Length: 173
Image 1 (spheres, rainbow, N blue to C red):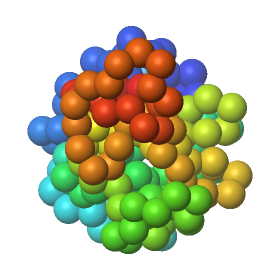
Image 2: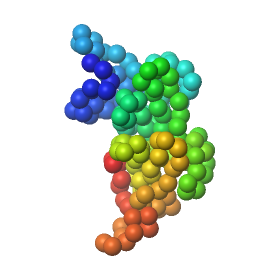
Image 3: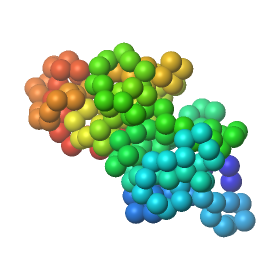
């Protein structure tokens, strides 16, 4: 079973293991489990090395792009990581900085408690700290806020522009 062909239902079942094991695994064709990312230690180390030797810190969401690369949101690591499908090398693509500015490189951005993630049309969408949805253009690595506010939660009336609306409890996208 290739990562690209991993059924969505199985992904959901494995998500339950992510936060407690600090690792991500998938089944092999022979029925055994293959650890793709993480050693089981809660930390965010190993960028530039093999994903199976890296540590992850409370991973909460996973998504695959059209090429089969794996993306992981680390809720306690405050970052998004990517595992290259061809090399199995892990890198942090977002969350190493402190800026909440718009239109900046995602590695310089603050990614506070990311939860669910999804990919559509080469854009990675991230549910941020229960209050916003941010988007990373995967071809440029530029991050923007597409819904909610990074400064607070709440509710807004219908017709409020998405980037001005207050959201509450955003956990998945």
